[in-house]
Amino acid sequence: MKSENTVQKTADYVKHKLEGEGSGHDWWHIYRVWQMSKLLQQIEGGNRLVVELAALIHDLIDRKFIGGDIDKGIANTETLLMKMGVDSSVIEQVVIAASDVTFSKSIGKEKPRTKEGEIVQDADRLDAIGAVGIARCFSYGGSKNRLIYDPNNKPKAWSDPEAYKRSNTPSINHFYEKLLLLKDLINTQTAQKIAEERHQVMVKFLDQFYAEWDGKK
Ligand code: ADP
Ligand code: NI
Image (cartoon, rainbow, N blue to C red; front, side):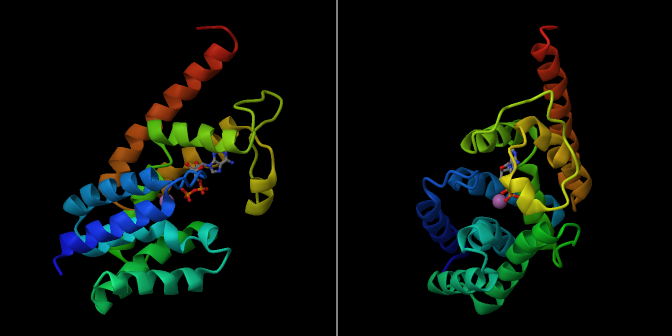
């Protein structure tokens, strides 16, 4: 089968599967990561088909969708790609790239093993910063009934990610606890440049936000 067909069929499947997902991992998050991954691949290299498929399925493996069982997520994804007619050598590379995006997220600083993994991880991280990142942050906070900002609740370093998830930390704190740190975790040079620009958008946004909060602008 032509690879464009495989990619389109996979995109249709993922779109159907994630429709209505409200945790910031809806189809349009996948769509943006997919588009950005293609742009990065054009400049950074790596296998085009592997990059596109890994971008499309990266959140299907994720622990959030499979109740903590990454092996099960991987097995389901392999079956799906086999049904789409993808070569087993390609499937292997897609799974390595996509599971590195998920796995390295959970353990912190580990780098993906492959160029394709680096690209999709960069695209995923870029989607958490800049204008879209700001929107996602407040949308997530809203879904958890969190305040947008509370001057009496300062950002802090959380060592336990689960405790962080359960907390009622205001959305603005998430910029300091995660979003402003992401630009230093980018793998590729191309994504680094885009991250710098998106970082500045957030810095400006925060300046304006505090000025408005105190009636100064
Ligand atoms: P990922 O996109 O890496 O899977 P998460 O599941 O942690 O990341 O987050 C999904 C989206 O929700 C991201 O845009 C992220 O910034 C946002 N988000 C996650 N945790 C918080 C939080 N505590 N407060 C505000 N936004 C959050
Ligand atoms: Ni993602």
